[in-house]
Image (cartoon, rainbow, N blue to C red; front, side, top):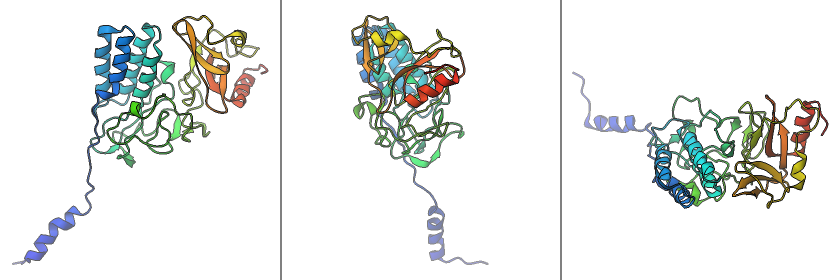
Length: 308
């Protein structure tokens, strides 16, 4: 008969427990993520339409949500904003919401959506991670370990609205950032190998030029990319912030990206080293109004066979 000492029996549980890593649940008060948006929606006249969209949105932050549920919810938030005169506050808060970290019950990083958003205001935006996450691993099937169009996120856990790193556990991004983008840049690398400050540069949707360090991107198909002349409309040179416009219209005003809100242009200045241009699309006819560099503008126009 084999005899086992009492001391040996006591050591068995300790030895088996040693390799185990403690996991913690990273959660938040999800309703806080859309409370400000809902208030802005009601103030803009959204009435009974606001709460159902708000609820659908904040429930997308639960661990059970699909990879693109959060982005789809943000698209719905912006869709409603556009029916309410393109309410700028609703759009701003929608941009922050889409970057809010999601719950992580296993403390692993939450995968990113691999589909382009419906609305240009969300181009290049992706969620931050909570700082307590294990930045060596992702949950899920490992198909969303990088934001669409990027080759890395640096520092890990950052996002365009918070480029210095992840969000403290349980904290709402809308209490840390006032804008959907942080123009200081975090050095996220684009799919073409260019480091652009937490942005994607290239035609990641097949029809738009995206730069998350810029305020937004607007696409038009009124001008063919094979045109023999540069695409930027001449009328931009005469526009001011007080120029009359129609809801949803985008333009370049005084070098900044402008969106029509309440019959006048709201201008957001581009990140350092960039300015607003109307650029030819890469894979289809038309132009895209976006913040970019002079070099990118010249290269895109040259690719159409025209001169800058």
